[in-house]
Length: 330
Image (cartoon, rainbow, N blue to C red):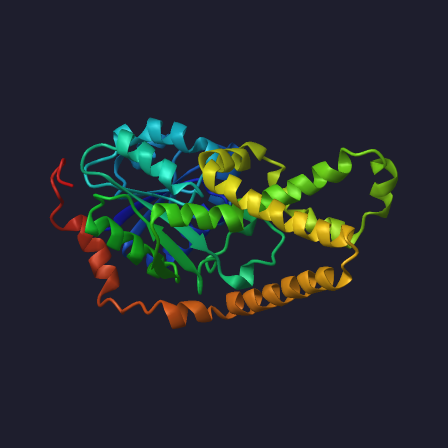
């Protein structure tokens, strides 16, 4: 008997999870759902999951684990739709950058005996420089050598948390643990802020007098600095929702970013070339250090020793095939 994992959203993250879990067919049956017909067609061609259903309720009805890999603006609506169909013991996980808000919603909407655990995936560094996005960018090794930050609300069962850890290992990543506030703060800084900064640079240039001439001069620095805006082409509502659902943290990191820009502006305005150079040199060095660490993953090995778990696959299965907690037991 296998464990059913249902994945909502067959973009880069969802499809990659399906491809990675396909290596464990004896243990896991993957079911997929996506609201976009063209994505469903391509996902079927690429066999990213064992089965794709077009009825969201049917997709979750027999699921032991449900993964939301969907845009932030679809989270609440999807949860309201499918949560009533969860069977007792179902665990919901998501990859959205707004864990605290999602925890509030799941407390309100999940049936008794079901649990929520948040996942913040850190991708394989070998995949970061790729320009593809969505389903086209899906690959089985997307999480290999990466990390999953795991966060959960109080009252979550130990089995649900261990399930998140085991899932992380099955796709080749390392499990780390963070509280909801910490996870949201980190995602605001390194996920939401860079995209907002790219969009703001476009606003600060395209909407200004002189753009008609300036656009002809714009070259590689402008192209690379605004490249993240390409990810907003299909659905800017998703980034907007990610910012609004995590507004306090996003406002805070925007203030820090604005302060950094103001400091640079003040140094330039004062004619302090040494200060400008010093700021730029620090930025270059910091990026080089970060990228070297990001590629090697040394921080995970040095700072987060994760013990080996015997019979990982068997325990993953026993969580659902063995004795279940009764509805209402938290």
